Image (cartoon, rainbow, N blue to C red; front, side, top):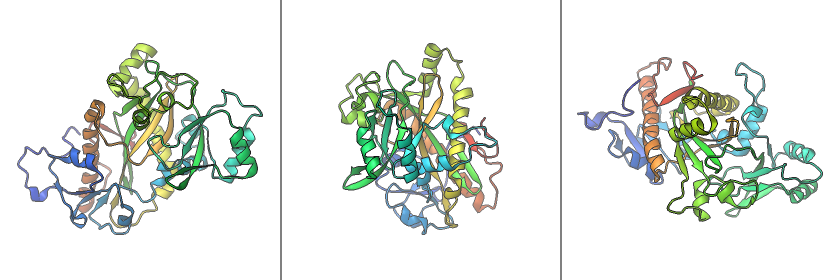
Length: 391
């Protein structure tokens, strides 16, 4: 479908027919993107067709009206909480028509708050530490790289596990459970720097299940050149921009972001791939990975109140190794909608507006009593789960 995500504001539309959005004041970036679009922003949530909330959204899970859509799915933490995601992937059957298993795309991961997985992690530890046995500790629900540690000297952890003590990260006075995930040492380096892809994808409907992926994402780079050393230095090992800024890695000429066209050009030049590698090889593989994630979490995601329309726009963080194999590290509930840098200024507005146009189209179809089998997508999205597959 080759059309604008929302009606062109220069056209003569009757404002009384425009969709009504309620956007909370914590979602300033969404408000900025919607500015000038043919939507009505209302401060009265009960009047809105679509609610975009960053805070206090759980109260709406039982209050949503039949005609309203909310940008959260009640059980989305099964994906966005790192320990819940690991548990769902571990429990998902390995065999199936997708010919994909989570060890193919998800680094070896243990939940340190789960007794069985704690024991399994302890059992596989070698007697003596080696830099070849490199792990990354991550708090389960925190974002922006907060609490992440790179570890290979693990005597302190062995002691806690032997004594049956909790392995936690304390944040703002509260204990945060941890996962421990195999560090990917054979990284694809971009001009010598560690990098990570951020994908943007949408669960547009739960019944029927409709999942979409945006065709372009962003690439985050560390500010210091990579080396398998100095593991306490986030400017080498943590790609999150918040951590780079916090630890002083941003100088006027620091380059922290690429877009996908630049990544494709780099891979052509440095790895000898075809000019359409992202479109024909990488993106179909990423769509399969996202489908696997949603299928693994589907039973919990569908535990949804019957009233209203729940959808979710998510981020997915992916690291490429030096063989260009993609490794999913986590799913983000807030996909990073700030767009102060030039890359995100180009990528994010059309991504969000196209996603919202799909959600509004689904609402319109349901009100009219129509199904979603012939739902068309904007050109900048592709199917993950829908009438046809991307791959």
